[in-house]
Amino acid sequence: MPSVEKVTRTDSGLASALRISVARLQRRLRGERDPDNELLPVGQLSVLGLLNRFGDSTVGELAALERVQPPSMTRTVNCLDDGGYVVRRKNESDGRQVVVALSEQGKQTLANDRRRRDAWLAQRLRELTPEERSVLRQAAPIIERLAQA
Image (cartoon, rainbow, N blue to C red; front, side, top):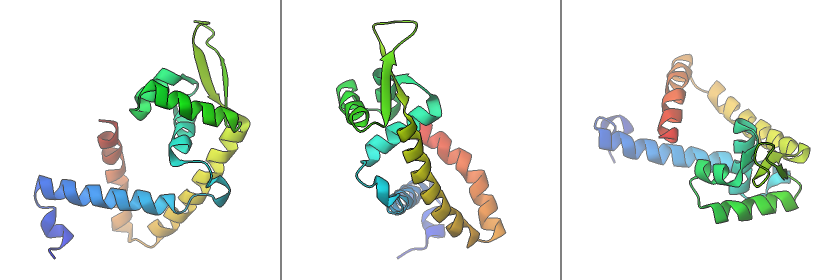
């Protein structure tokens, strides 16, 4: 089997290696979820993260951010609302629209989950050399740009 360094010499090799590595890291981080939140599916947790990052949003805005159809997002928001993780209210500028916001329970759930996964990742980062951490500091914004494309 060729080394990662050899495979990543081409753009297609880099694409493959990066896709595999990011997917593995994502699965590993998923395994570090807060056990108290394990009944909350990853998709619902992702919506809580969007609301935390972007603030109150309509179902349509959330659907666009998650790249899903609005009816799918409506089902997700319904589940989050039923569980007490979000609250709905009328849009102040357009009373026909409904805005979704994080509830206190949603904020706490998200914070607990992130704290646990961040602690695991911070520990793994401490095991790297300073040079490796420096490379990751440079790569993180680039990976974020790729994710937003």
